[in-house]
Length: 108
Image (cartoon, rainbow, N blue to C red; front, side):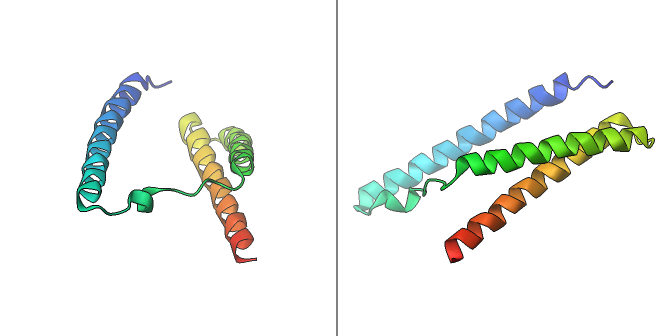
């Protein structure tokens, strides 16, 4: 199996750099709003209505992805390709299903 440690280390390093830059830009924006006397409530986010539903659908999608990855591996696909592709595919589909459910709740 491939040694993925360098990939994860690089991802953490670059992710940390991106987060630091993002937080610095956000702080500067908020400071400019305060200097102008504007209300900073535009940055407030609405809490999720059902976070347990989102996580439940997402984790079920991951489990289904593992099952399909196992089946794909038994059909002759390379192990890494089978598992990673199916986990990302079904995890993403789970999040799309959650989004559709939330949009229907907001509309109705």
